[in-house]
Amino acid sequence: MIASYANVRPISIVIAAMGGEGGGVLADWIIDAANAHDFPVQSTSVPGVAQRTGATTYYLEVFPVSRAVLGAHRPVLSLTPAPGNVDLVAASELVEAGRMMQRGFVNAGRTVLVASTHREFAVSEKTAMADGRYDGTRVLDAAQRLAKQAILFDMRALAQQHGTVINTVVFGAMAGSGALPLSRQACEAAIRHAGKAVDASLRGFAAGWEAATQGLPQTKAVPTKQSLAGIGSQVRELPEPLHDIAAAGVEQTCDYQDAAYASLYLDRVRRLCEAERLAGSSTFEVTREVARYLALWMSYEDVIRVADLKTRRSRLERVRREVGARQDEPVRLTEFLKPGLDEVCSVLPPGMSAWLRRRLEHKAHKLGVGLHLRTDTVSGFALLCLLRSLKVWRRHSARYAVEQQMIQHWLQAVHLALESSPELAHELALCGNLVKGYGQTSERGHRNLCAILDDVLQHQALDPGLAERVRQARQAAMADPQGRQLAAALGLPVPEPVAQPIRIVRKAAAS
Image 1 (cartoon, rainbow, N blue to C red):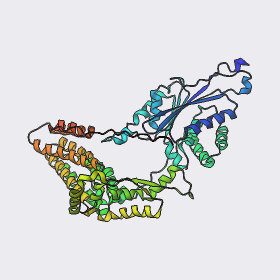
Image 2 (image 1 turned 180 degrees about the vertical axis):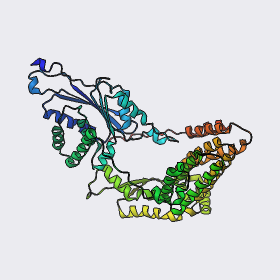
Image 3 (image 1 turned 45 degrees about the vertical axis):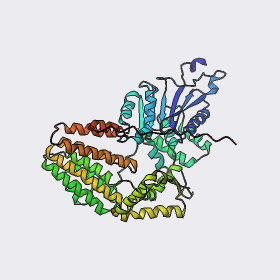
Image 4 (image 1 turned 90 degrees about the vertical axis):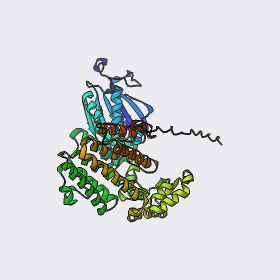
């Protein structure tokens, strides 16, 4: 009897899940399904931090021989995973899968990797002054090299499509991979036994199973409301390398303001395209970069834009999906807003804005008040709708005048550079990424860009390596929000470090 299972080893399973994704519930489902087969099973969990939210690693071992066959014998199961000794690794996010591979849990001779390809960005990625996103293709490439079998797809999108939580899709993909010694019937019975959101969970499980066993069905791309064929002949008249980026820019600027604003965007792109054509370019790399950053810059963030986005039906429906609310279930939604002097002055006429700034600049730091606005109420939602309606006024606001003037300054510098140096023009086009956000972030971006443009005007006739100088200055501006690296790169006086006060908050005594 002993010889029948002497060579059987436990199936080792690692689950890497982030907070709120139901990793613990997923582990419980596996335990329940293993018990249904009468298999010995053991699980442990180790909480951690993933720079996005709480990250917990769950480890399970299932001995695929029933207790009835084992009789009085019981296997000794491990409490922790060992590198190179894991049969199945499941990760609910792409970088979590990378973390498991980095720790050595994925082995090309043994491990099946099941992971979602979507991203939950870390704080460092979100706060980067440029594009700070980690290159996910490195994880995808590593998965193909390091895993015996890699089952990778966007499980979050599939879960949202079926109105459920991602752990159900992960469970279905794990069961469908064949690495779990558990039948589909036992897994589905475990979900039913848990008794929570059973129908939605079973839909997610079935979707994950089918994706793992049959592959994802091919779906047709949903056309945007302004596809390339429907945005007018002006985009189609541009060179082919500009079609996609110009079409996206038209859609962005039209959504932000109106069709006339989109026409202004296209007119700026067209004029630069013609200048680059005269300079002898066939790839139009300068115009592509300008078209990209121009659309983003012309869609600058202000209180009107924030109110517009927060009151859209698509956004409210997304919130309901994220919290798992049923169709007939009310959702209480509180928006946190902190309007200050900048936000107020940005929507006023230029003259009134300048007057108010002179009067209140000395106490601007005291004027920002945090507001908790209940937008599930009529009064709270109506207030955001009132702010949204100011879109028709935006062209008369002080912020609009400042942004358009600065945009023209930047575009003029790119045009002039094209006449003498396409490399310099390309670097100046990339400098459009310096301007973003609002408040101090926007002011810093404008200040950095102005410093670079002024330096170009000063050295343009004297410095043959000006393109490299601009590149180094742009990278310095991106790397240091205090502007010290940029000042050093341009030979300007280096500003003193900005004091960062440390606030110690005394914990209230327990009552």
